[in-house]
Length: 327
Ligand code: KG4
Ligand code: ZN
Picture 1 (cartoon, rainbow, N blue to C red):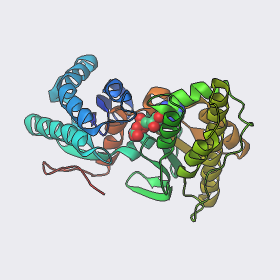
Picture 2: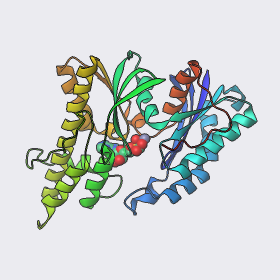
Picture 3: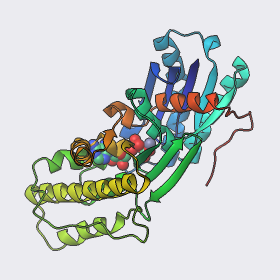
Picture 4: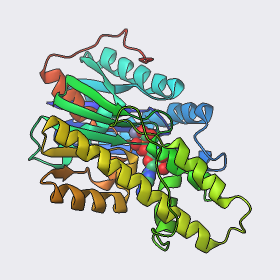
């Protein structure tokens, strides 16, 4: 079964063709990231305009790379939530037009869940139930997954998302956007033991809070002459504290649910320090930790196609009234 997926929740426009939820035939990603950098974050109006400008050519490129006639597509899927409404509208409208003109079924997909599915595109030995941790620019959540149509949220952030905290700290340090990769690079030369930071406590043990640590970074710099050395130490200590918090909570979740497999997904999962520390800590606890490849941690449509295949197999389908899901 060949599923066409469309991802347009933020600043990436992506179209993919995936066979049987596994084999990626094409996964084309265009990004408007560069246009947002000077504003220190994604500007929704610019993002949606660029979605509109890119979507047709990204679709044509995907068809060309996959060497597939559109008639051979069995299902059209697209991200419907969460994301920037204007950007989502573009992908959804394009998906509906394709479904109508090709006379194919249509299915809307949750972006956060598709980040988790990215692991199934890369690994064959994952067995449900699992605990999943999504760490992206907009979300930080822990899930207990028995089945993709039965996903239970067991922890989430009370304020900033993890990627958002990386982006905000990078902004404080004058590094640019997106902040995650810039903090990671800077942290490599820093002393991670130099400054003691902590993430704020949460009422639910499995929830997260990252806005306090961002403020601590701001206070630490107050009145100091900021040089490269201070920035490096700060990046290293901030990153270390955030990663340790994520690991601690993910391990508690595995223990609480008596689950031995942990899936990580989302943009922050591209952080090499995070990957290495998670792999070491989970191994110690007898848990197998999975990550998607670096490129599949980022927003892409292959993960949308893959999840759509799974859900469609279980009977899920939508009609042409499909729209952005606000909640
Ligand atoms: O999943 P994603 O591409 O988009 C959303 O769904 O939000 O995640 C983007 C986020 C940004 O906040 C970015 O700073 C962060 O992922 N990110 C990283 C790294 N690469 C991207 N954070 C830490 N380390 C990285 N290497
Ligand atoms: Zn994402």
